[in-house]
Amino acid sequence: MQKQEVRAEERKSGKKVEEKVKEGKQEDSKDEENPPPLMTLNHVSRLCRNVKESIDFYTKVLGFVLIERPQALDFEGAWLFNYGIGIHLVQSNEEDHRLPSDTQQLDPQDNHISFQCEDLEAMEKKLKEMDVKYMKRTLEAEDGKAMDQIFFNDPDGFMVEICNCENLKLIPADSLNKIKLPVDRHTPPLATAQNDHDNAAT
Image 1 (cartoon, helix red, strand yellow):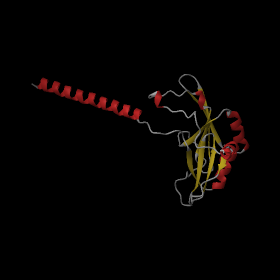
Image 2 (tube, helix red, strand yellow; image 1 turned 45 degrees about the vertical axis):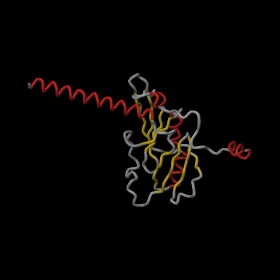
Image 3 (tube, rainbow, N blue to C red; image 1 turned 90 degrees about the horizontal axis):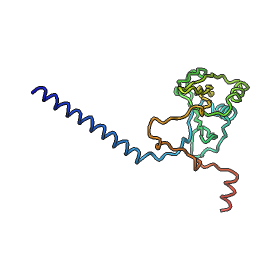
Image 4 (cartoon, rainbow, N blue to C red; image 1 turned 90 degrees about the vertical axis):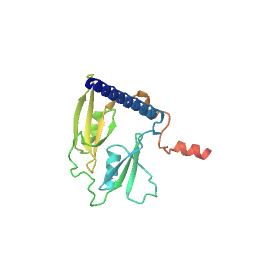
């Protein structure tokens, strides 16, 4: 009797596991059928102690361009844009504890934003010329390919990484058809002289 009861319990637990697996597959298929309608990363927002100093850093060191900011925003800040991504600066208050306390610490495992670079030597030379403290390291993958990285902080201690990230191939751990690459259009729309001319003609 006891053996029969044990086997019956095993069969029940086996069915529960199968049901959970089926439920998981159904949830995955639902996710694939209804993916979030996202397109690309729009911007990264950064608190700063001094908006002007941060504008100087992101424009002169990283080559961002100052963008007109909506007047509806009633707090001090700035919008910058380049490389298909925006940096939104927000003036912090004097007692804001969300800013890094140590602006000199460089830890590659800490929060950071990363930019792919086609010439790391030129970037390193620029950092030296502008007297920006930085850290270098090389990450070697299992296939022997290496990725070089440069880490440094913005004026408020938020870390930035520059790397030749294209050296490492992205291998999806999940379904490849979930990956979207924004190749057919640019967002947000960028106002250019040509755009203005075309709009005026229509």
